[in-house]
Amino acid sequence: MTDQFIPAPSLLSADFSKLDREIADVMAGGTQWIHVDVMDGHFVPNLTIGAPVVKSLRKIQSAYLDCHLMIEEPERYIDDFIKAGANNITLHVESQGDMATLIKKIKTAGVDAGITLRPATPLSAIEPFLSEVDLVLVMTVNPGFGGQSFMEDQVAKVNELAELREANGWNYKIQVDGGVTDKTKLQLTRADVLVAGSFVFKHPQGYQQAIADLKEKS
Ligand code: DX5
Ligand code: ZN
Image (spheres, helix red, strand yellow):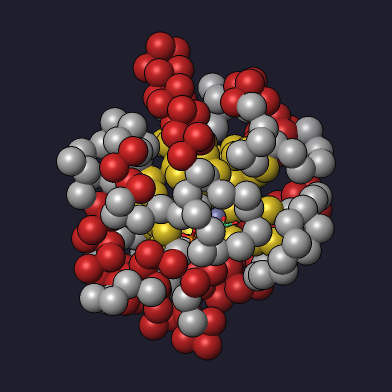
């Protein structure tokens, strides 16, 4: 769909003591997307950040705050993320609640809505929502932690999503999250947005080089 990938640096691997500078640095590399991993210690065995942090990050007006909710009960928190100024809210289909209703609520508020699934969940679980969402996230690791290895067997979902989009005239962006590097991206030519935590924030030549490496679609 796109000529270049859109890199979405995941703040999970950033230095939380200076998030504003970390974000300014990655954005200077030429991306607006900032991926915010929200974990509740129930849906995944890790606890990260919530809507108050998103509210603070909103001061960086040009950032596109892409919030990936790895939480058991998204319906309790969606309003908070909308009010905080999220640009996109992505829900896990395995979370509790009626996904169609939640997606509608997000979109009615003028916020982009995404749907995602764990690696073990078949694509058929999200098919009913594909006509409504702005983003589909393919997880290429089990959600919960940064720095895990890319699961190649999930690439088929990316390709199938691209085919379904074309066949049905749907409009979602295809995003991939987990173990993405300048090497693994070579399998992801049909994706649009690449989330990367470790690859960006631990890149030996700096964040801007990492962003440039991720953008190139060859
Ligand atoms: C994992 C998160 C990812 C994570 C990716 O549950 O959704 O966004 O930060 O980290 P890397 O790029 O290090 O695999
Ligand atoms: Zn994520």
